[in-house]
Length: 403
Image (cartoon, rainbow, N blue to C red):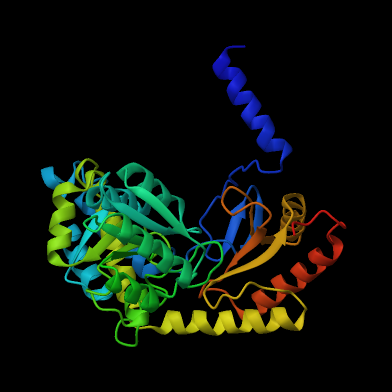
C-alpha cells in the first residue's frame, strides 16, 4: 500500500469509527415534498426548497422555454456567455433585494469566496461569527486577511473584536461577515445591531442570505431577504450574497449591492470572471420563481406551518432550538443516537437530515428538520408523532451525551 493509500484508508476508518461517515442517498426525483429514495417513497423534511418552487409547473415551463437558447451558456459572462436572460435576472435580483445592482455567480460558495477575496488582502482584517458557513470560512482563508472570530450572535464579543481590529490598524479594511439565517440552527443574526457596530468602527458588513432570500422580506418585497426584513439600507448592509438553489428552487447565486460594488466584483471577482455562466434554463426558471415568490402567499403559508410545527412539537414534549424560520433543528448531541433516530424516522416513512460534525460543532449533532410551503399540517403531525416515538425508543445513555 502506498503512503497515499495508507493516509486515505486511515482517515476514512477514523471517520467511520466516529459515526461521522456521510453517504448521499440516491433520489429518483427531487422532494416535492415526497422523495423516491432507493425504491421507497419518503416524505422529505430535509430539503432547502422552502417555497416548493423546484417542481412548480410555472418554473419548469420557464426552464423549458429558456432551454431553446441552448443547454449551456457556453462561455464566461465576460466572453460571450452573458445572455439577455442573465441581464434580466441580475436586474430583477437587484430590485427584489432593494439594491442598485446584482452579479451572478455559479454557486453560493463561489460567490462568497470570490467577493471576499476580491475585497480583502493580507493587510486587512475579517471578523466572522463562529457558526458561519464553510464558504465564508474558506473565503476568509483565501483572501489572506487576518481572521478574528466572535461567539455566535454575541454583540459584545463582536464589538471587542472590532475594537481590537481598529486599534491594531487604523487604516486596514475591516469586513464583518455573518450568515443572516444560520443554516444549522435556523436563527437570525441581529443584523441591525451588527450594522450599527460596523458604522461605529468603519467596518463593512456582508450577509450570507442563502437561507433568507425568497423566504423572508418586507410587505413590499416579500422575497427580498434579510435587508428587507430588517429594513436595512444599502449603506447599512452594503454586501448581500444570496442563492438561487434553495427557496427559489433553481441553481446559482448572486451578490447584490451598489452599482460601484457590482462593477468592482465584475472586474475583480475571479470566481465570476473565470467560470461559465449559468445555463439559460436556470436563469429563465429563476425569473419565474421570483415572480411567484413576489406575491408573499407562499411565505405566509410557510410561516403558518412553522407556527403549527412548533406548537405541536411542544404539545408532544419535543424540545426545539429557538428558531422561527423554516429550519427547525432537534438537538440530540450524540452522533450514534442521532443516526439511530434518523434511521427510525426513515423506517416510518420520513426523510430527515441527521447532521453531525464537522458540519456542526462537536457534541451538537442534531436532526435538521426543514419545512416547505408544500407540506400540510397533517404531514407535520405525522412526522412529530414518529419523532416522539423515535426519541422515546432511543433515549440517551447516562454519560454519553455531551455536556
